Image 1 (cartoon, rainbow, N blue to C red):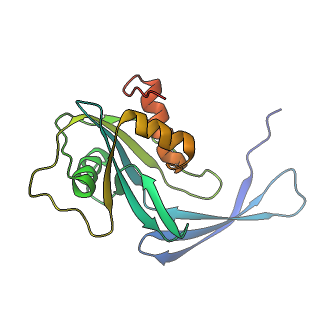
Image 2 (image 1 turned 45 degrees about the horizontal axis):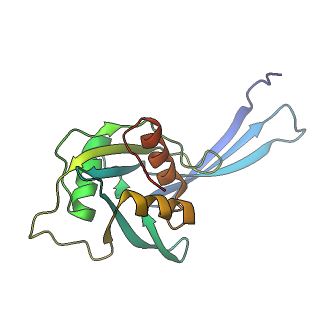
Length: 185
């Protein structure tokens, strides 16, 4: 059975900060008598990168996330800035957060929807193969801890829930499906 799409009858946006806008949309839907109001957030698009060295090491980051009130293990990444491409941001974030440098062009994955029920942004995922070690004078960002995992350590982090950010797990899953990453458990 195919239903007709709901009819948008009202919308309002409130900028909450430089990073996020709150949208309120009211729809007339054929399966409800009264119009229904929904809320969503519009953050900037994200960019994340799964980087792998020639010998199979994977740079990751650990940082404090106030929304969860804890430190999380993640792929390097950040917000997409105006005037740059997602691929440019991927290379920049990898170098800023881990010191590792791209030696090849990033491999783009299909853009992902981080949360279709609440967020109106895209996650741009990339794979960077054969990344080069950081230069000797590289200094980390104050709030980001760089970690370097083996493929086995990454597999354990995924299976234990240590790396639990669903969009990042999706990027790793896509890399596995494309044959660009191999993990041993």
